Image 1 (tube, rainbow, N blue to C red):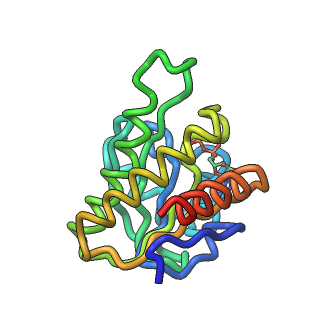
Image 2 (cartoon, protein in one colour):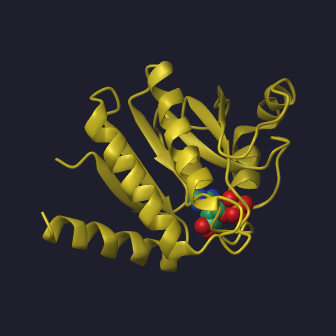
Length: 173
Ligand code: ADP
């Protein structure tokens, strides 16, 4: 069975070991998926985030999940798209890698990612999907410690992009 699963919907509903938040550098809650996670987790999440001293782009930090069905939230800060001139592709890859490393360090086995940076940070969706799938697949080949990774797509465009990349990867095997 594949260790990667595609889901369309709201990441705050998922009962997994950790959901990943596409946060901003302050970690103090913004809009989009970040706002939805804070709303669903309750104000204790913000209180814990205040103790973390922010997070650099491409890095990741972990908190508890509070009222969420997921046990933990891994907060990572995606790059803002600047026409590809600011090392955005490497930084996005780092978001996925550092989130997965944190999951392994904390012995977490199931993890769900949103489509980091593809909302208000305007990263081109197709390129972001290719980076996300490639980085996660390679990581999963290197360890048995993570059992399942869910990609949770909120919008149709991302869902269709992930679907077609996953299908073409299976066909080319
Ligand atoms: P960023 O600032 O990293 O671009 P956004 O939150 O604006 O973060 O968008 C990242 C992605 O999260 C977008 O593809 C958006 O459609 C998606 N998104 C928004 N709300 C949710 C949610 N509740 N569950 C899963 N994905 C979501």
